[in-house]
Image 1 (cartoon, rainbow, N blue to C red):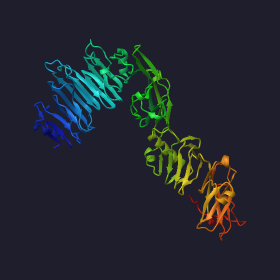
Image 2 (cartoon, rainbow, N blue to C red):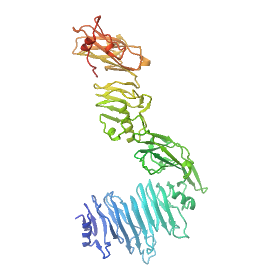
Image 3 (cartoon, rainbow, N blue to C red):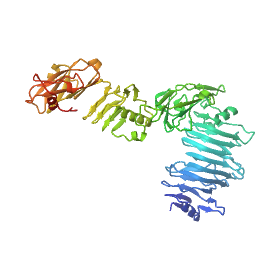
Image 4 (cartoon, rainbow, N blue to C red):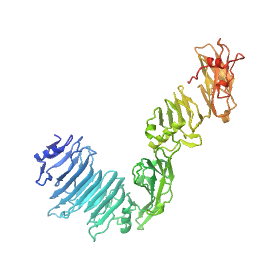
Length: 611
């Protein structure tokens, strides 16, 4: 059975159903009162592999029992847990890790602390602490009957904890980094001995919109309790109403440390119009090319981290921290440091990207400088507006600085659309593929046209890169280009049964086959530098039996040119079609001092051979 009473505890395994939970009342580990409240008589152990999705909507008196988790990632949801009875265990934690498990995530949980305390001994250390890895919409309450408050809610894992209410909870204890408390509240009578946050070393915390209530008018209003001297290297970010409470009540920090960093004020909000469904990435001056976690400080090793890439919501602002305040233990004052050189990147398919460095580091929330509505403009160069269509394109890949086309026919416009889609899904990559008139600049990316065609047509007629453009496996490029090697191509069309042996700068090197400058039938060069220069090609008869060399004058303008060698019907003397025009139909082909007709030329030449 998924619920067994074994070794004086209820052990959950497999898929736990409601009927199995109800049937467990027949064991010594669980009972049910006439009021319908279940009463836990033993600890519960969640074994590895257990599924508790159906275990919800119960009111359970857990007495002083505990939950042991051998399975990680479990969520307790829609439960009311009442801690009652006498106290027998010092410093009790309700949720505990066992084996290779982890602490639970809590969703819509109500926890009521209703303990008598340590009867007769007067030992105030008999406390309850709740540890968890995530929580949303939960209430933790100590009843007025209880002699003690709940000592601590312990936020152990990185993440956002939203809508948490602690009523008569002594402290919110942050033990992990990158903890975010959003729209939470806490009240206590014990601020003189506790505090809002008992924080372990290295922890970091954002508090956004916090409702803090001191129930004991005579208590000291502590904002942060240096629990056992553990406040070293702690970062605390106070946003929204949490900032207002802090500024109106003073620092209120027990045993202040120089290493405590408080961020207040100096916020910059951005609302991205048309941004719903887009993505946001943050960069700062220390790492100008690599995205960083959001909400920075001036020391990256101690910064609070959130998600690197954020999906932009249509209803929320993106908020930057622009100031950091550090407490000076010697002077008792706060040192403000502005955080400049911050920038962000926003992308959404169909819209022009935004990459902006913002100023106004002194902007304070509520001022006109603190809010910037930013419009994402439609990218009019995109021809396919349906993102799903572009995402389904095949025969293209972008990886490690190389764009590879492997099938079909591609136009520059189609390539542009795919690059923009790919960038919207790869926010860590800097922008490339921009337009300057009819030229698309793909930055330093190599372009490989492998067995397919890059054809012309449309508004984009030139592709430019500081990398290399390579055409291979019978692929063709039929548009203008510029790469690190050149901006012109001569396609050498060799006769049937003949192959290109090499390309040289002079006849002597060709005869001796020394110092070749190329061996591919596609020869690429820079027209502005090498136009007008002579090159020499050498071809050999397949299977042996002959070779020939011919000289060529390279055209001095950008373009794609064709040059062909033809043979006489007796396979004797060879001559060359000089690459002086793109239109091969107008090239005069000489062979044995005779003129070939266009039909003879077509008959005696072969299609390009791509080595």
